Amino acid sequence: MSHEIDKYILFHCKYGGTGKKFKFKFIDYKKNNLKLEGQFSDDMINPGPDGFVQGGQITSMLDDVTSILLIFESKGYIYPSSTNLHTVFHRPITTGKYLCEAKIISKGKNIATIKGEIYNQSGKIAATLIHNAFLISTKLKLTK
Image: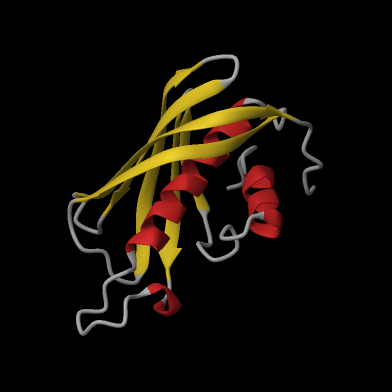
């Protein structure tokens, strides 16, 4: 089943630096709330013996999901420039598919505060990101 948000995910995949790596798939959307499935691959793990995903990759996935929500809700008329990202790691994350959820906490004319969460396969929260974003006026040329 296709959803209106798919064209925004495709745009992010084509032009986003990390957007193509996470292979996002639409799960659910309600105003100020987006759920996507994202995937971590073998090239995203730390070199240590446990094979856990590197924290920067986790933060990047959450930054992407929260940004997609802001872009979608503006119908492509704003693009967020993320600032002061704060990530809390609750549980280790390995390769595989994960549920990601983005929520808009507050949104003004120029700045938004957004929260993103990743849930493991057991439905337990694995990581949380809270950050602000400057809202840049634009009109994205979306893929059809």
